[in-house]
Image (cartoon, rainbow, N blue to C red; front, side, top):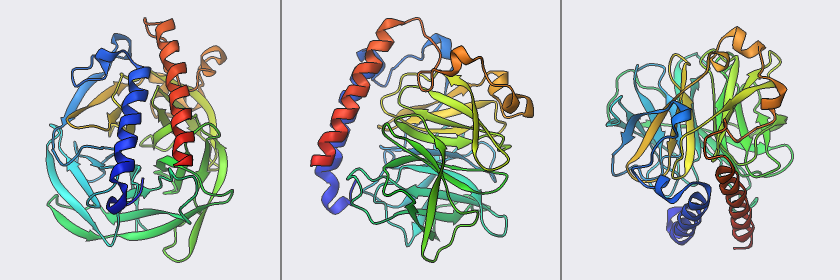
Length: 346
């Protein structure tokens, strides 16, 4: 997306196209506010994002300082702000990033600064114009010890990829090393690693360390850093993380509830479940429990799922809808491909 001064028409086209794609991906009854969660996911509604200012929640991050608090942000075109949500979904504080702009915010994560203090990172990494931006940006603010509405000066890190511009919506931070990763989107998706330490001077070059699922919309590390998850519009997949800073084997897939435009994921504080959210007004955030072998433990990261299931990278587990889900998936991918082509030409 582009800045608010000239981005409203494009933002409207994106919303319409996103809604069309969502209609292809799930039955019509599942795209509304009263969408039912497929029984086989075991999910529940953790809370709803009811703040009228939050209409394009595009990232989630679990607080390190405040138990029960989850951070989110809008996609773009508005105030560069992070919203601290309590367990009931109500906004407890609004943190405005001083010196930042909200061009195309797509993801967020909680990490630490050079002194080890908890920080909130926000990724302005969307590039829907196919390389029109000379660089993208990640912002960082310290996570406040007390939650109150305030403006916090943001550190700014300029990002470039070693193999040229990439559209991306997923950013992850390894809690063991504080290293930042970005997963690109579309069908030649890759996982990129930042330098071990980010610099506010010059450019931070992202280097490819592995592949990523197609249409990756967000990602997050488990609390112990031994595994991470990447979600798409259709499902999620958990991977082991190697000691060398490179992704290991896929550990298995996670079925996600049908959402209007699923764009966000984070782990719960204890790592036993995922929280997944969607763009749109008054959207629910679902808690999706993880099977024992996908939870962040040494056993989970060392025991991949059987190869027969391992090949289903983005689809989630089978649901009772069977062939109908497959048809929605194919139609949805076709719609997204066509949408990407149209956007590049526009």
